[in-house]
Amino acid sequence: MTHPAPLAFFNSLTRDIAPFTPIDPDLVRIYSCGPTVYNFAHLGNLRAYVFTDTLRRTLNWKGYAVNHVVNITDVGHLTSDADAGDDKMEAAASAAGRDIWDIAAFYTAAFKADLGALGILSPTLWSVATDHVQDMIAFARTIEDHGAAYRIAGGLYFDTTRVPDYGLLAGARPDETIGRIDAVAGKRNPADFALWRASPVGERRQMEWLSPWGPGAPGWHLECSVMSLKYLGKQFDIHTGGIDHREIHHVNEIAQNQAFTCSAETGANLWMHNNFLVDRGGKMSKSKGDFATLASLVDRGVPPLAYRLLCLASHYRSELEFSPDSLGAALTRLKRIVAGVTLLRDQAGAADWIRAVAEAGDSRGAATRYQRDLIEVGLSAPARALLARFDAAVAADLMTPQALPVLEDAIAAKVIPAQERLRLVASMDLVLGLGLLTLDRRALSLRPADAALDDAAVETLLAERTAARAARDFAASDAIRDQLASAGVEVMDGDPARWEWRARLTE
Ligand code: AMP
Ligand code: ZN
Image (tube, rainbow, N blue to C red; front, side, top):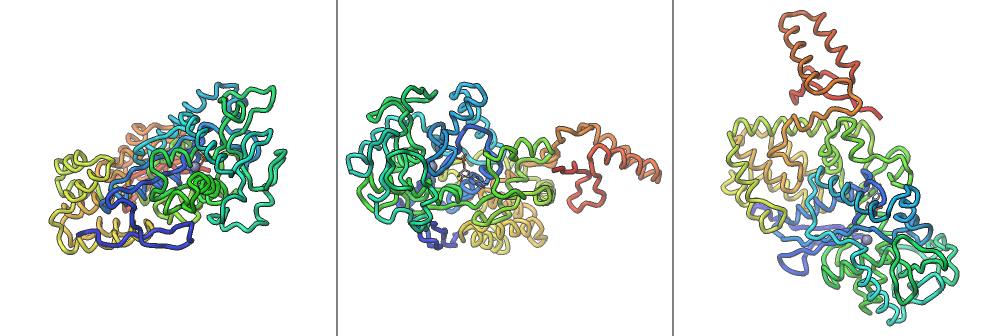
């Protein structure tokens, strides 16, 4: 057994790390709160999905199949998570003067493209909130029948005093909920929230459905209770989201689940939350307007996988600071790794083997297990020792910051034959998702959108400069370096990764 380290995860419910045992022996069921599709995802949002992808890949690598459901929120999410403000989708549609369904389709496609660029596996199922409104109505009726909801002019509201231990997940004290009082007339308790939001009399929303509580739209928290129950069952293994969801959204999901099932079961055994991506202004958020997207990185010449590496280099439960410096360091590190793997590929003459491994795998757990076994068969003792270190790191609540140096050690371990080192890289990359078997340096040299020169022109100038240096014409060589610098291209002589140039990152 090459992956013996026992898996353990931090559970936000108990605020503790505990050994992980799935409900079914071979299949892990995971639900991840997905994006609200009224705008592009920002890099903070994408951190949440790099985290869930790492979780899922680790489970696959450890031998489990995974049933992973991710929702698309295209209705109901208000500008404040705490049950106040406008519907984000409606607000975006009216601000842009566009059809709300077009907005949802456009940003859903953009989100999926971002995930693809980051090497994030597609979930087993995308579930779209507006496809499940009838299910939500039925669910809310049951909660009402169980006496945990009340009708007011504003719609149907959940009575948070009807579930024991409301707010346990957030660790909230009663006085912390006071700030959530808003202007909804008839609301009984500050923390109560809408299950159904009735359209104001005389107003029509773009998205509107008939219900026992009048025309309107479902409350945001309802969709995740309903879709996780429908596709994963009453009690499944892991529910994920960003740490903001630990305070309100998941608290309310748990309350709904308990009122629906008339039990103390929360819906998931484990609630896992990634910490925030922050920049100088604090938590990155779409509502702040000027936010960083994956496309904005590409425009600056940074390949998306450098951002993936930045995420992996910090633990998912730590805050991660985003800056041109931290991103630049991640890009340089990725280039070094790729340069090292490229050398191994050349030395190992491994093209056929790489193809076989790639063909053996797809995104399902069973295939990953097969792929992993194919990669690891017959590894020598020193190689297996590196794998064991890697295993210990990722099994301990996904300690990717400790796993990455093991990858780098494996690439550099001269005592291990190149072919075996490449196989170590291949196995570790099943968890890291950087695409290291096929990634090459060309793919990492992106041209910034505002660059004065294209890649071919840069390469031509570099060739001329190399020729000038060979002819000891240093004046000409320096002139070319200056010309490149003024076009935002930095020449890197003697770079250990043998990378000749890079685009300078700007704010
Ligand atoms: P949203 O599109 O707002 O529904 O959020 C999608 C996911 O991103 C959720 O899991 C959020 O908790 C998460 N999220 C939002 N902002 C950040 C941030 N700055 N850093 C990390 N995760 C975030
Ligand atoms: Zn959710």
